[in-house]
Length: 162
Image (cartoon, rainbow, N blue to C red):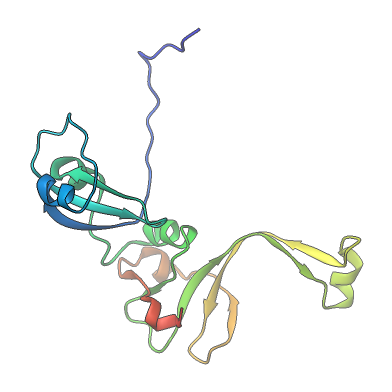
């Protein structure tokens, strides 16, 4: 039995992609399959994080995406959770944030050992880490200024040595 499709839920999504403006013909020359229903000739060659490439009509692409240069805190969190490090534009040195997913770590203190599982591990919830100017890493707690700022940026790979 089909669900009633007259009442649709609304969705919002965040994806990070690389894109180059180009015509559908230029994309086809690069080997990207264009769906026959596409009538616009201007658009973007889109590359996803996993390497998948597609072509998107200009109107569709520009409605869904905006250039990722500077962001607000909410967008920075979405980018972090997608696996990219971020920082405030005015932070000096090699200071940046990155997302750490939930994982089990070996218990290092007596208290941790007292709550560890039978393998001697403690399950940690996901968190945001900060790499400080001196190279040390700690837990990040945002300030009000950080939360309200609109100068967040993605950290380039060369910045953190990937």
